[in-house]
Image 1: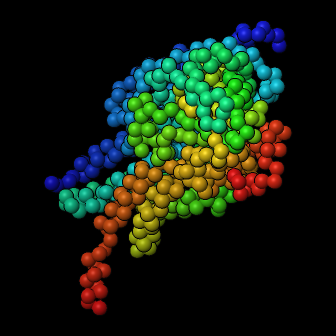
Image 2: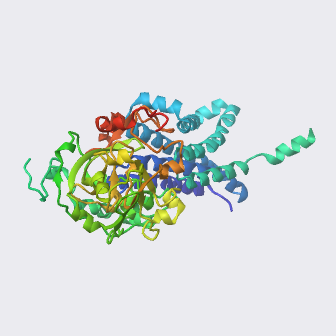
Length: 202
Length: 341
């Protein structure tokens, strides 16, 4: 199948809609009091899962492009990646504003004391760096370093499901599934063949 | 305040009419989305309203509304506190009750068809007169009183709730605790047909059911330990532990076991559900203690859920024993509370 510019345009429109709908839905749920009497944990969980799902979708783009020979769709990765950052930002903002109620000293103490918050924050810093450097001018300026920096998304992919797993009280099934998904997404990218052939050559 | 014995009186927690969401509006809240003309949006999404469309896992919700009934009680002035009460709509829609699902709104969504009639409560073990009580007989037999308690969840949020019920000690004294009894064990109903969390591990969050809790005899006989059959003047809604639950306000909320079917006086410390699940995070005592952090968060402060919107909550300092130290601190003399958390 030949992918035209027009196809990409409409694919991007669809992606925007898919990514924005859950936010609108969350706002409606909270306004109509359908997310519980005190929806703080609900909002934090919802936006966190949103970030994770968007990350999974983003990491599926390249394998799909390769498998189905749809090369041009990799152009949508930037858009989806920025939505990962947007959801992660909402998640962090909800934690700071609704749960901690802007107690910055508590945020600092909790970050250094709690491993799950620490790796969450670390992952957010990665996403922040990737989002900032997605500005085309910066990307050009960075040259080959850009690629190196953006490989950090794989580190975030490994850390974020662990952040989820460590944060729950007892419901470990859902985070375990995300860990499995992350492992698969990382494994299909692992340059196994290259590593093996190199070893043989050397 | 004047009151006549046996007659329900207005008490200080009564909010002004203007402050209260009318029950019909509250129960109808989902229809607001529809009224906004956005019903189609909701309907087109794959899961039901409160599951969150990003959640991979969701379950059917109840459609009808559980009916609560007014109770006859007297306010107990010894247990009035000068703090803003958490509005009833928040008390009844923000609950931890894993038998009905793990998120806060799952119990209100999933428990409305819960059948509490008939309900039997067994009192047995090391007692003079083991007895099986029908709950209707029990509520008639006991003089009901209202007490307003702070409720501090181990997850660092808190509420102020006017409960209706009677002290646990009066109930235990009716059965007559034998001298060799050292602890009291409590058990929640086990009924997977009615409780989806007991049917499925993923709905129930991995808790081993039936949910069990326990107190020492001294804790159980303390005047603060309360058996609640109602809140805000009416019988308990299922999400709050209908038809009868424990309320031990100086301990984290998970000690206040819901929908109790059995109270057994025993000779050794009984197993308790959260302690079984994560002994490093939840101890047997579980006294509210700002000095002992939970492994994953600080217990030094708490989000007090009060009136008003999302941003109106306040973070307040957590008190040792949730502010009930005068009544209960003596129970733990010589006990290292950082070790026996």
